[in-house]
Length: 127
Image 1: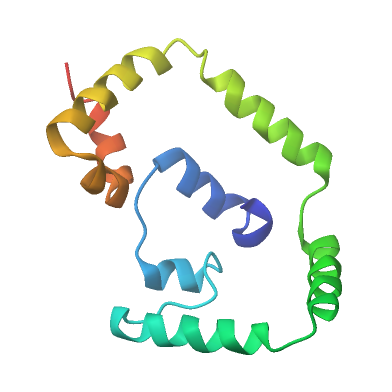
Image 2: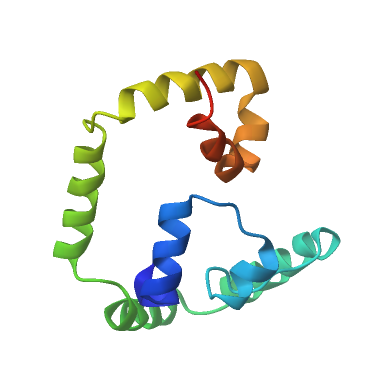
């Protein structure tokens, strides 16, 4: 993420755990484009149909070239995953996971998935 949106915004996003709307995500480069819901199915269908008509080897080669230029080194991905796994043993994780589990029961998975940032912000306010 910092490679895409810069250090300052990445710190804001990760440390705040806030939710961001589609327009912000598009502006910051998280998503290719934000479309109104009623346009999404047609756009995806048209793009998928177009890509399906292209030579698969050419598509794979183009993707490989783009990946080499844009993806972080494998060692960075491995380190980030290791840090995430290690974070599950932090002292504050267990109480938060219990509270989040209760929220899942009380509110439901759908709303928590849709507004995770909102609910993460509430965890510290719960007993």
